[in-house]
Length: 269
Image (cartoon, rainbow, N blue to C red; front, side):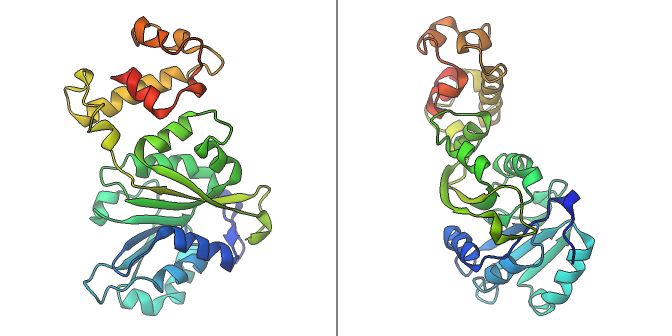
């Protein structure tokens, strides 16, 4: 089965990398796992070994595959697990899938995702009404470094992830571990303890957020986006007429990339 470049398909073939993903997921028998783009099912197979719906009807894998050809391949490969309701296979674009229709309240996202929609996937699930409790993803190595802000320079991406959870770099995955081999190395990241607590507990119940946590969340992102609107400009220029001059003065000549998550929370209060 030939990978489709248009869908960003690079099939992981390393058992060692698969096991690192599994360990980072800290999977229990009754977990509900959502897998995005299962491909040929190498990760799916290992996930299925670790869940068991027989105990309380919960433990299962929900695999969402956009490619019709791969979907049919997986239907045949996992016919037994599908009949046992251990695997639910969905032929759909993950970005169009309405998570509320799956009736998921507590679940984990564990996936080797298509790299061309990494940002869209992170945004979809981190801001979802019913967020996953944990995400373990295989992403481009450079994207992983940006999320972790290894150079001590934050970005909208790193702040976006840290606002909702605690990211951890699990390990690098060389490009030779994929078929076809991509042009860049990859990395496994885990985002743990996903929630909206930053928008619901002190210091964030805002005078600006009388509409509740959603209003606080909206206000926070309005300020962050304006702060990063012109990367090389100082914060005082980007946030003029948005945040009081007194608050901005606390950050001197800093630029948006120099501020931590707590700094942005302070500015949005």
